[in-house]
Image (cartoon, rainbow, N blue to C red; front, top):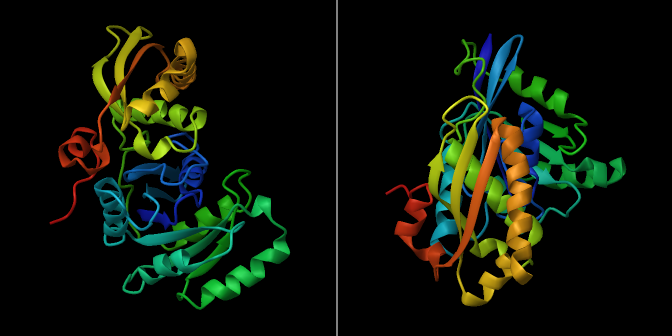
Length: 298
């Protein structure tokens, strides 16, 4: 048996969360075409006949402009010290630039194997991969270079076997039925935030968060899960964007979120959504603590 931890790092919007969901075969991380969707570390566990991989998804590494972003980048960098292998996930449909070179530079002192994963190959011609590989080979000594499509699954099985071969020998680190470290309250808040990202205008996603005010578990199997949430925005002008004309947008967000939550929890869900203006919450350390975002290392 082999088992160990594997970190997924990379620039925002490289497709790390989509790849995590594909690897473990379940949706534990929200996905969006907006960068900086993932705000904290997410663990997902996959079992195999001959081992177990514990994947650690991290926020995209970028230049932080708010205390929220500083915490996000810290969470990603800190993960590099705690794993048995690293996947640097790059969006192969975009040109590798200074930001990608910066992320590669963070791996300079990493002692474990680092696999370069070229994601989104379903969007390009295979001939376009060679120039990217040649360019990125000069930035780090990769143990392997694996092209994949998290969207279609192409190359993912080969990636899993490559990673499993690099794990230390040892028994499984988590029980066979363990899927993720995300608490139920976090899964709910992130699901609601995903629907906000999908349905609102481009200027809104970075300044929204979802707080769980009340979480009432069903009193019997198959009973009703009641959740009361507050969607935080930073300005009064953003509030009507989330609410919509005559409440149409918040109703749509709630309907889509409830559908996903009922499928995940396998029960009926009552979802109450409110919108609250909290100016500059991304720079408010107490607000970030209340939202469960990772604290900075002192």
